Image (cartoon, rainbow, N blue to C red):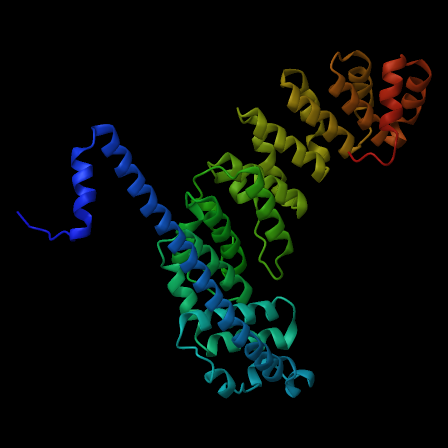
Length: 384
């Protein structure tokens, strides 16, 4: 079809190739492909190193200028030292306009330095850095990253919005809280709690996947360390959420914020068929020290699985009403399970006033193993 001119010096090579056996031909093709791939790999490495060198060279020149401008115009601003509110301070952007902010890499470098300074300052200086970020319209670049199909860019954008305290519409973040990508999902939930001014826990209503233990640890840290966050009554999700992991997590938050009005909602969970969730509810009631539920816990004890029985014994010890000393003594003496005996012993020790005589009696009459358990539980350094 097409006659491709072949240089004359390749004629001997082609002639040899045509006359060679099939195995030799395949070997020659493999060698040629391997050489080409190797050359391509070397070219890619050299290109990457060259671009990296150029990037470092540009940043080595630009970053000191950005830092000096931020220090001069923000950190060392006389009105900041005088305590003037950030909203009343007029920023001088002339120096920043001289930077090559028309280039994407320069804008990202400027954003990174502003965020770096803001993470290390508070008060008026922090507010001024936020104003600078907005006046240079760097937030528009971050919003463009939010629309990227790449999850890593969305995570970076969410992190920047959190650092700069830039509000984002709920319709933008809320769908990301159910993302299949774990990193994006965690970043979106973090951002929603930090940035939502109305209902920072609304994503509890729409979350479909289970909250993994690490997700719960991160969310707990974020919620309990976020300043000026509006804390709702978590009984709402305990009552209505169909996601068991959300209910379990809300029980932990109820304990942390000591939400006693949520006790009736937690008591209803004692009838749930999920014994793991039931154990969490018993744990919550014990830590809230709800005395009205103690008799019910004891009455349901014999019909519960091991995990729930342990939590009931612990709850009785935390409530420490003194009414269930005989029950605890019986479990300590007659239970065949080591964990149950240990929990009963610790609860007896916690009922110090009412159970002091019983504990002393057990110290004198208990067998060797029970005596070791009891002395272990009497150690005040052991957390219960």
